[in-house]
Image 1 (cartoon, helix red, strand yellow):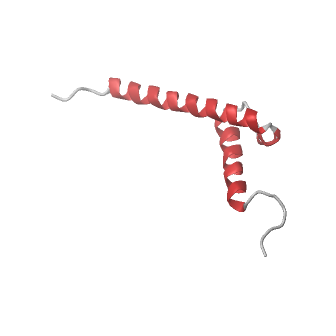
Image 2: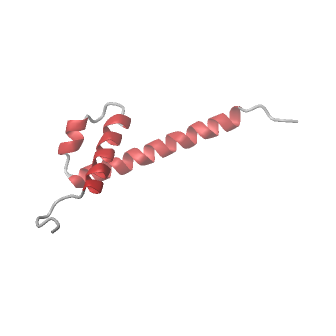
Image 3: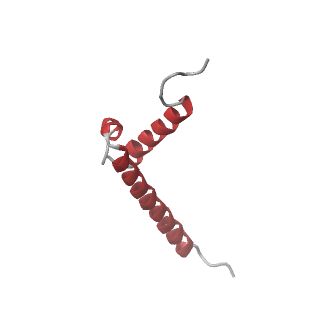
Length: 74
């Protein structure tokens, strides 16, 4: 017989902890693990989206800078 109570599956727990780690690790000290763990879900979701957007923009800026600094082939 399966679980008879509501709870998160192992897969969900892994995904939640990946999010917690990502936010704590890549936030450059803005958040620590405990802060992210205790953060309300709506705020965690908001900050994760903001962090993703910022990191995407950073990567695009680095790529553009590398592209503009390459010597042109003749």
